[in-house]
Image 1 (cartoon, rainbow over the protein chains, first blue to last red):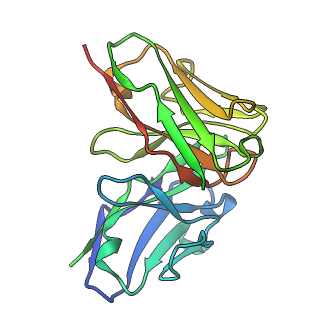
Image 2 (spheres, rainbow over the protein chains, first blue to last red):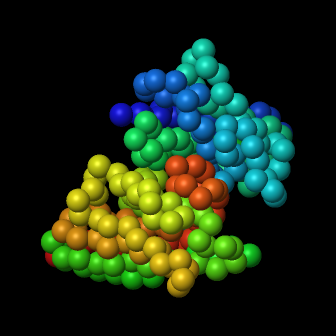
Image 3 (cartoon, rainbow over the protein chains, first blue to last red):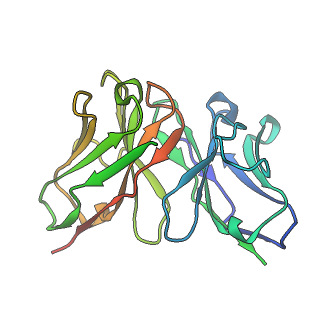
Length: 111
Length: 121
C-alpha cells in the first residue's frame, strides 16, 4: 500500500523560503497526481495545490508544487514566508486501488 | 458559493450505529464526486470513503470497509455515511469534501466544517 512520508516540522523566518517533501513508499509518485492541503489551527483544511502543481483561484503564487521522479517525491515550496502561513500541511495522492492516501502532515512554524 | 454542511454527529456507544449527512449547495451536485474524510483529535487527516457522481464508483478505506456505507441522493443534493459497529477508534471529526471532477479519485477542492463523532461508553 502507498504511504506518503512528510517531515514532522519545518520552520523559517518571515520572507524566507521553506520546502516540504512528500516521499512515496512504493511505485512511482508520478503515476497519480499529488495534492497539498493547508490546515490552520482550529480550522478546516483548504486546497492549495492540486494535480501536482496547480493552484486554485485565490491561492497566492508564493505556494508552488512540484514532482521529482528521481527521488519519488513531491514538494511544496512556500516563498516569502508570512506569519499566516503557520499551519499543518498535508500531501495526498491515490494508490492503485483508488484509495486516497494522506501524508502524516508537516507543521510549518514561522520564527 | 460552495457550501457543504455536515450533520448527524454526536456521542455514541461502542457497537452502535450512526448516520452522517452532508447537505450541498452552490454547485451542480450531480456532476461531482464526493468524499468523507476524518480527523481524530490531535491527529492527521484520514480518508474514509469516496463516491462518483452517479454512484457507479465507490471506495472505502480498509479501516471502515464492511462497516461503513457511503451513498448520495442527487435529487436532494445530499451525501450520507452510514456507520455501523462503531468503535472508539472511529472517534473523529468527519468532513464532507467535494471532488474536483465527476469521478471521486482526484483532488478534494472544498471541505465542509465537519461533524464530530465521539464513540465512548
